[in-house]
Length: 167
Image 1: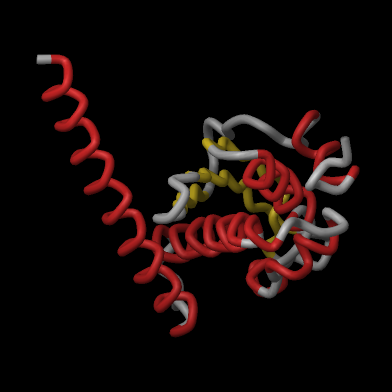
Image 2: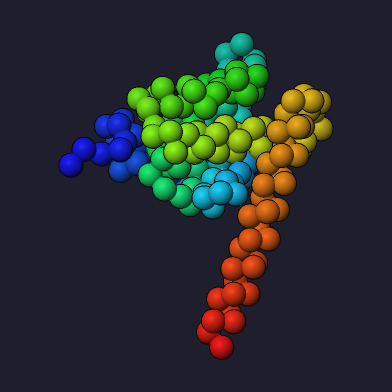
């Protein structure tokens, strides 16, 4: 039977790169999808390169989600390493999909989830270090926060329903 996923996507799903948490992370971003319920946490360690520019030295993830969510999480950690903050913010969902050699159309939202978790991690890093936050990043942060709030509300409703069913 032919899979819906490319060989590259399945490879990243079965053996994800950089899975886990960075205990002393410089930044952590969380993003979720209100439709499917996938949630991604992306951890970043920032350092300096030989040109004394801030770059992402390490990236790890923890994701609750489907094959595509795990694979896109793995890919984003590979794509951001060695990038400056500005370069990292330019990583697109299309780059992620291309790196995975395609995703089913119904799973493209998972690549968006990865870019949102990255944007949120960078937002948190800039905020923590009292840096100027670009207007487009601030707008993305506000949208991400709204999505997380909706997911949390739905989760609480589900928990109430589960308790009612058990009674």
